[in-house]
Image (cartoon, rainbow, N blue to C red; front, top):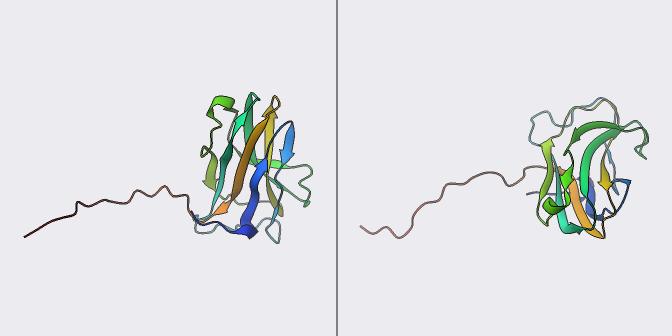
Length: 142
């Protein structure tokens, strides 16, 4: 997977309790722009450190007219993911970057219960390593 620091919402962000926003916001430049005209860019959120102590976690991709993501509108959601499934490497959200109507994009993390551990990565990526490449047997001799 190709990542870019300028397109990262959260990099190892601890998510513990309540509703939290991503540590970074992406400014699309103008409201209502489609930054994903060829549908190659994807929102990708995964667990980097396993969660413990809470009940579940919901990840929302949000947009807002302000850079602090106040009054966010949810564009996509992971739905509630149970604590037992919040293991390292678990993909929480993977979807094409949607057309936006507001200028700023970010992530919103909603927890139930208080997590004593748990970190996430989230960003806009070029691909998500889901391509299955063919394998070929080696060692042919004539």
